[in-house]
Length: 191
Image (cartoon, rainbow, N blue to C red; front, top):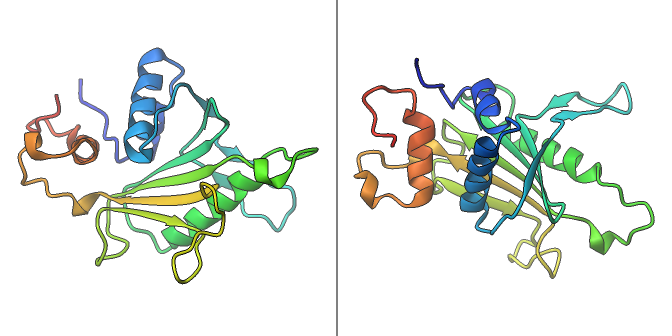
């Protein structure tokens, strides 16, 4: 039996979006590593963003996840470059998921964080590292919100990881990216 190609978004959704203990633990582990936070519980939600008018673009996310603290994360696996701008798509997904929170009767300071995490198997910005975080900030770097920014976009540019480095010298993020990109290769060392 061949291993799934996790660079394929359908395989990525199938492996990490299943309602099983193993899939849930693997998904939680990925999120803890790339978001740098402890997560107690994750729940995969319906990835279809409902349109409320004919003018809205329909969107189907790869994986929409909610944590026990109501943080929402959209995980996207993008294997190939596309003519459609990935940075603009990430902004659209972030705005749509963030705006779907039920804020009736609540103060806006209680809005829950939303993160879009894109794993890209191509380069977006050749001058940056493999991991790039974007938040709302002034030009001088001062954050818009004095507390933790409720909106973040993270791009993981997988080709920028040095796969010639021995696995035992890679950090956890690099090893996970190695696994995503090589798990279907029968000669790869994937554990």
